[in-house]
Length: 82
Image: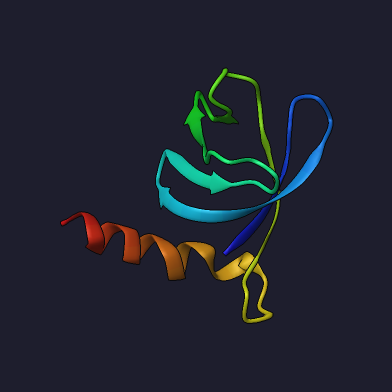
């Protein structure tokens, strides 16, 4: 799954979604050696420094868009944690 995020400085960045929980995501960004984690806090997604991050668009490697995100991904994450 891929995600385009909007950063606080105005940049839009395409990211690879590595892991998803209901209140956080682990993402790989281009040209960065380390992954980042964003968290859902008080109804807003925020980066590791607390700056707001927008989730602009989802898409999948198989050509479908991210509309099926909840149906496809959250059950897998939930099953993996039990």
